[in-house]
Amino acid sequence: MDLNITVIGTGYLGATHATCMAELGFNVLGVDVDQDKIDSLSRGVLPFHEPHLPELLRKHLASGRLRFTTDYTEAAEFGDVHFIGVGTPQKPGEHAADLTYVDDAVLQLARHLRKDALIVGKSTVPVGTARRLRAVVDSVLAERGMDGLKVALAWNPEFLREGRAVEDTLTPDRLVVGTGTNRPEDTEREWAHGLLRRVYAKPLSAGTPLIETDYETAELVKVAANAFLATKISFINAFSEVTEIVGGDIRTLADALGHDTRIGRKFLNAGVGFGGGCLPKDIRALQARANEVGASAAMRFLTEVDEINLRRRDRVVHLAEEHLGILDGARIAVLGVSFKPESDDVRDSPALDIAARLYSSGAEVSVYDPQGNRNAAARFPRLNYVDSAHAAAAEADLVLLLTEWDEFKRMGPQDLEPYVRERRIIDGRNVLDGEKWTDRGWTFQALGHRPGVPETVAAR
Image (cartoon, rainbow, N blue to C red; front, side, top):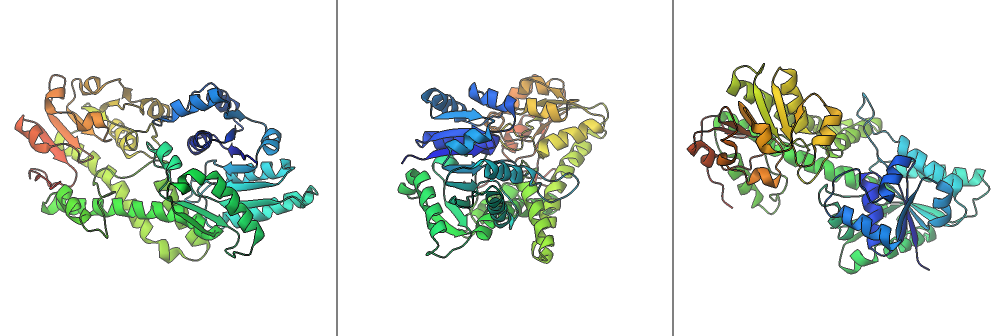
């Protein structure tokens, strides 16, 4: 029997997963309560930027493998495997995750099921959520007199990198599946794992490791991964605070550390810090959950990780003040407001936060981001959003590079000189060759370098 798949939630995670499941050969139904979002996706229009995804979306709308609906009755009748891919944002005024959307998605599905089904959580949730939702499903089915159905729940966390989400879904570096028990003799466990092995048959046949575990481990894997990455970024940024005082080249230091196979070079780029919709909220939610279960001391270090990250934003604002003397009335060009390149995501973006702080201090701030301007303008409309780096640099007293898009990394001083009023630049991502800029008379500052001390050429 061919499997039919539904994906409940059609935001970044859900739309990506639904489209990639169609690419793997399944008939897929995307489900969302937002009719406008469903209409847009049904026309082949994504509400966010993700390389290669628009082409796959249009391909499988045309093939008939992929369609979208707001109808849970239709979804329950159609699907054999139901993926839950809704958001778990940070609660307003709290560190804890808001599970409203996850709870509602599982509850609505359980109320409409009339045939055997596997429910698979992909959303990032606090440990203990899956086991609680398993009880909710059982209770709803019993109330409906449907407790004879075979309905299992598994947790299969996502590990998507924005800008590489299609690759990470089709060719993941690992697959983790958690069920209510690890006992091999458990028939429900084996049935659930068997269905998911069919869903992921192609990546598994290509050698992707499959880790089969319990609910709690599966839930912890994602937040543990994000906590580790956040810690690694804040670690190198903590050292950049030191090198800015005592001297030294943070890029060379990171390269030297990266040659140690126990450490590795990835995520050791000093700069303005991390942001986006995952790392900040996930480390805070992990701390909140640790407090709830009596393990607050174990996760206390994440408080400092978060604080180091936020201090990098303060540092850029202070550097701007040092270079300009006074921010009120200064013209500042900001290159990049998305939290990372190849993304239009500005949630908790260090770059947008810095731009907003400079504006609030009286500066005239012109912003250019290849993909992020629209989302940034929706969150902070008072900045001047323009359509090129040249337009942002027009009559600027200071240029800030805050997101490492390729077009900014390739940029040389000669590209901006005809436009700026003063030759000053702060490299907030450590991606420019400072010597090239200083040789042409620019005042150049990169994070992790003591002002006035030239950076060395890092070994590559």
